[in-house]
Amino acid sequence: MKHFLFVLRKPVHSGVYVQEILDIVLTTAAFDQSVSILLLDDGVFHLKNNQNPDCVGMKDTASIFKALEIYDVNDIYVEIESLQERGLTCGDLCLPVNSLYRKNIAELMKRFDVLVPG
Image (cartoon, rainbow, N blue to C red):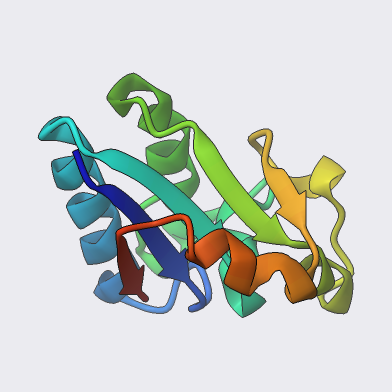
């Protein structure tokens, strides 16, 4: 089994790209691979509470994140500085996350066999 880390940096409703990455995450996990997600920069908005994507005609990606547990995707990491720079805290997110400082990101990435940028 390989260990995959999907890194999401783009804002939550930036088009179909994010939805496609989440589809790849679900597909990878469905084939019994170990999948984790790292949210950096504007990617932290994916888990922000009280999103209303219907007003811009987009899918509710937060609901897809909530379904990740069904696929055994339980490790979601968030960079603390990315949250702080956007005026957010872990309490503003719709799922429990593992938070880590920017200086520890490289160490986290070394633990994975495959890094998928997004």
